[in-house]
Image (cartoon, rainbow over all chains, first blue to last red; front, side, top):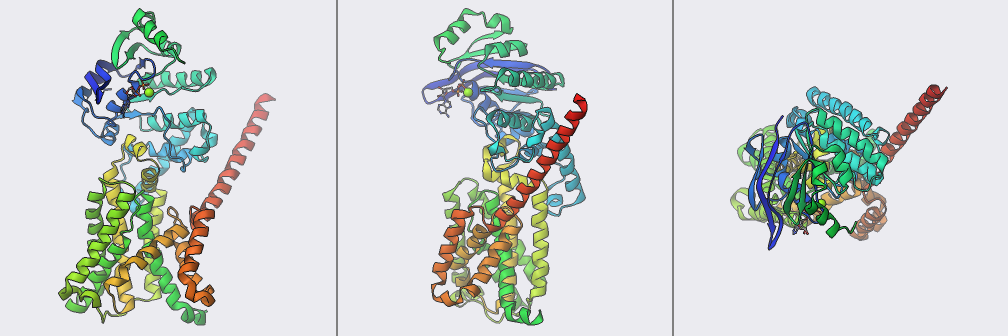
Length: 254
Length: 300
Ligand SMILES: Nc1ncnc2c1ncn2[C@@H]1O[C@H](COP(=O)(O)OP(=O)(O)O)[C@@H](O)[C@H]1O
Ligand SMILES: [Mg+2]
């Protein structure tokens, strides 16, 4: 299982250094935390890894190969998947269809087989549907399989997005505030799923405001503030670090 | 029945051709490109067939296939500049494509007969052949809908960034949509020229574009039923509204506005969606019942 390395990565928007020379690792089989106050640059990191934003400086490597200049669909096909902080579902499609798109990376039947409705394409589609249903089951969503995604409650929409992101069994998953707006019961359920995913070998990058949640789940935590990496390491130690405390208190608007 | 057929044969044939053009239009719209290029594809197919058949004695079936291939390649080429554009700019670019095709037809007078067009095209098309070809195209469209391809097109239309984040190569699938749109448009353009004896550039101008767009807007842009309903309305309406023949454009306009306002997905899509929702509701009720039964068993 490959790991993801960010080396001296920066992103400047004009004069603003949204991300400033950060280095970090997302190893396989672990949940790695990325925390920091609002505007610290966390989503910008995810957008650079997933190929949505270009890097100003630095390099991003997956299993030794640079993916820093790859388009987002190429990054995804290499096995790095993501969710969005502002949920992005296909609103007119059903929950099941939203998850089915997640299998795209695993489609092998080919365009002609699809156009002609050949058995290979239909068999593949049936297999994806079965897997999608069991994924939905795992996220407690199977009863909504045929509901239009746009009509779901917020917490459910987030879960659909996560089910979609892990459908193709990627090596690395970037979760941008996956439990934001959820209650304790819901986020505990998701925590269990995150642990299972990590145990199966996936590398998870968990972006989260809630320090307690990250501390419980992560082996390694990175702390961003105003684009700079102000601390990293064991979550219990990091969260006691005066710089981290100051960053959180200094901007504790939430 | 036979009498009915003879009385309405031209309307039925017009309907079948419109269905074909409707599918060409639908593929592009389904993939999220507001294209009006179908008129250009149809012109390419129609002129390929007309010129080859009248001037070189090329076999008719082979020239139809060739027209379809050339229009498909045209679609591929058109998709390249479109990849850099979005929204209204894409629509304008496809309009420009139609204008270029029509100007070339007017220009290359030696081949195309300029504004006068090509005449003396053998009229070999009939309802039976049209039906078979429409059925084949419908089968392909149906396959797109029930395999991963339709989902990808739907994803591109609804939220491109999501499709990309899941590994969909946007340019590749837009190109595919345009190859298909071009091939289907070119195919039915060729069939049309084998039906009407004579074609001229004017046949593929503004009125054609509006008609094809109307078929899909009235009928629907995602379902198999969409273009059928749209084309049916377009074919039957003038018959029903014969007393209003003078006001036909106005009547069409009013109906279009009513449909867009009250059935924004188009008549055909709305019908299919209605049945789908009923099926889903029934399935959900079944699941709830099964769950209740299971809970009752486990709690006792
Ligand atoms: N596309 C952009 N253009 C300009 N500035 C941006 C852009 N995206 C983010 N920023 C800025 O970069 C900083 C970091 O944003 P972001 O990564 O969203 O923070 P976080 O996710 O940690 O809350 C913020 O100041 C934000 O306003
Ligand atoms: Mg953010």
